Image 1 (cartoon, rainbow, N blue to C red):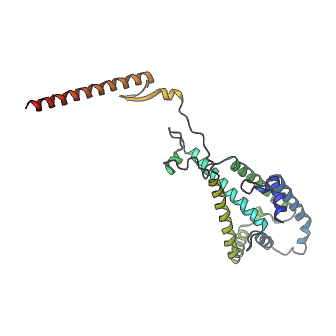
Image 2 (image 1 turned 135 degrees about the horizontal axis):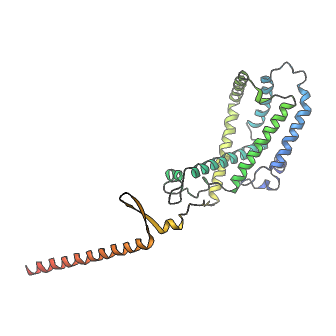
Image 3 (image 1 turned 120 degrees about the vertical axis):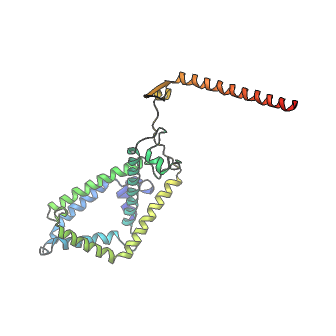
Length: 278
């Protein structure tokens, strides 16, 4: 089942676990096919008209939890945790990159937030905190999958199934309590599933580090006119001194230093001569 499921979801890239991302079109066919099956099987609700919407959702929650939270890792759970770890990592790097860009840029070209968190720049080009094309593809695929699930949920509510958006406050509270009890009853399986997810996340992070890939982000370059001029404070305001004038000033200062050194040597020689005479 595992290889067949991987082939259907990932397509030709099924063998590369480090870079493979779910094929949106294939998943769309799977979800829509399951939705059509659910619609045709909606007759199973016949005879359950007396059940409340919360009770119907409780039955659906049991089916979902039986697939996701298990003692032993199933092929479906392995793929789910792998892709979920990639989604979490890619979205975290994307949020961090956006926060750095919004924090502003220093004259050195680094972001303000990056300079505060990493003043030495050790992680400036690290793949752990910088996004790549694969991360962007993962984020885009995730957004498409969320939109697909929203459309499927709307279609399910239109066919007479439970509409999540129409739940009342008391139903939401009751459903939350039911889910909490079910997760608690599966707490051992839940901890094992969480451990598998953390392992996937650590393995993917270690893989990015071992790849040795350094991601260079574009830095802000100071315009040439800013390099040719520098600000010199004066009374009542500021003025800009051109590069030739600044160079001439440097020559004047250097000449003064040389004169001072020569004068100091003359004084030392005179002092030595005086001591010899004495």
